Image (cartoon, rainbow, N blue to C red; front, side, top):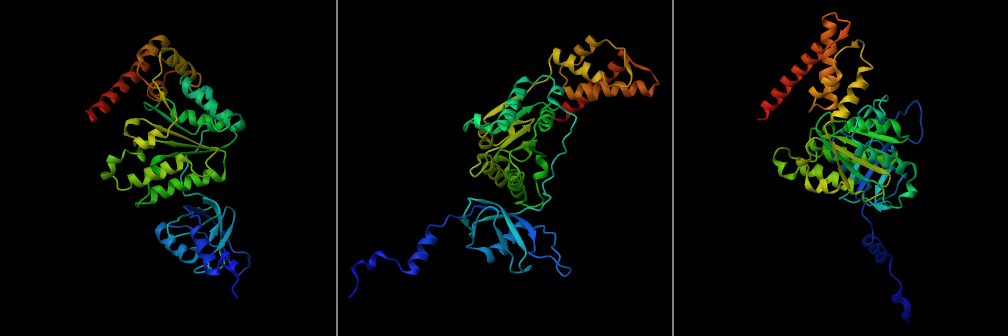
Length: 371
């Protein structure tokens, strides 16, 4: 006689079906090549570099489709390199299942993302003016030192914008030197690959590396090079793909706490609206006023190898409209080189006037190109 309570119990097949239905799909899987479980003279772990992401994904899913993965887990290749191990650097979401829709990245110990070298001799005091931006960087510093104080209200995505040479990158360099945390500085143009799909993969890799070493500050210079408004899709075929990758990472749906993104641009109007909306604050870097120009001149004059015998106040007035970088590179440096070429022992008003005159010629040429 059949037990009437038997219908409370599922068959093995029903259990398997329910597990499949309730599986959480892995959206992004980041793998780090590790090597073979044992080493010998006969087995040498190869250097792994994935040159074709799409092809590797097909290869990987053929053997790992249906695998449940979590952070720090090891999975093994069973085809070209039997028993070669990859460690799961990140699975988003964690404890999820690889499917045909999973995006898979392989990061080498040395990332393919070309980071900028930080200049170790730059500090906050070297950035003249830009008080609002300095205040924001102090907030970032406080957060990274005492994150519990912010209780979920942490700084996350900040945009620096303004004329070239006004100190955007310099302030990021100073932040890198002041903080005892990982900072990744990168030119946006280096995230553009040779093929459609390379750009979005590089962006995911950049953030994957940041999460491995967090707390991390990511500084992306010239962000307009990759976060173009989507109407420019016809100019470069991967604009939408790159914008979507940036949106995913800036939203930080998975484990992006303690990863802060600072972007810089000279042309905020070119940015995709969705990207701009992710910035909690847009901070303008302005050209130095009279007081700031005086400080910039005085600071840089101390390092000049020749004595300065020019009228400082006149120089401050004549450099109105110049950025801090222009004052240093186009005025003081040009004046110094002129004095040295003429075997002078001092820099005079004549040298300064020559440098300013030459700088104005460059500005006229630059304006003519875009008129």
